[in-house]
Image 1 (cartoon, rainbow, N blue to C red):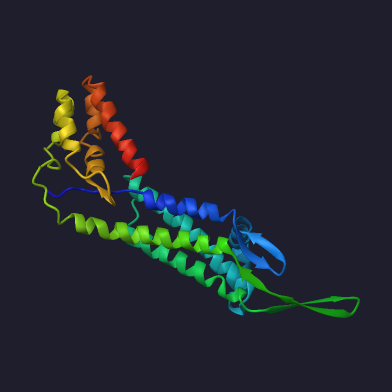
Image 2: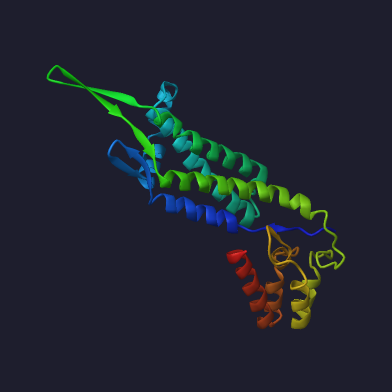
Length: 255
């Protein structure tokens, strides 16, 4: 039986951090005024519905629709990856996450194009028409924002490919082999209170990379929905339970 691997979320978390950081940076210069990332995101998301009918007219409406699409799909992709990583009920495919992330990146990059052209704003006051040139310039916040979209797309693509690579790995140790009750050798060692064997099993597996075998084994549940740490705790071996949960938390946070 081949090991069931569990992708980590480190890159996705980093992408979210970069995305949030872009919200505080200057994104667009509007003539002499500056629009920070949060304001640009706010206008794009909440102006999205009203801008759709005018999307083919170009200019600001097109930029709003593309920017809103990029923001919404970025957030959707991140939470889809969270569900895929932590939920046992709703599990979006990594392929769908990759597609939505790529669309988010493409929308983010192309959203600035309609704003690069000079537009004219005409206002009439007391029968006097005034023509004002409207010019936009992109700033660092836009590049950071687009970079976050690219990073989460990269993570989705990388994790979509990783499980296929992992299935080719041999499982000579037999640590992932399950008994009819769904329990592995880690369960038996944890139930017996054999902390040396528990250490030997978990630290013989890779604890880093896109797919952590160690994390996957520790998180494996038996037919009753219990993990090895639960079994150790029920058997009165709190030290082993703490060891397994501590290692699981460490890898989920930092790997």
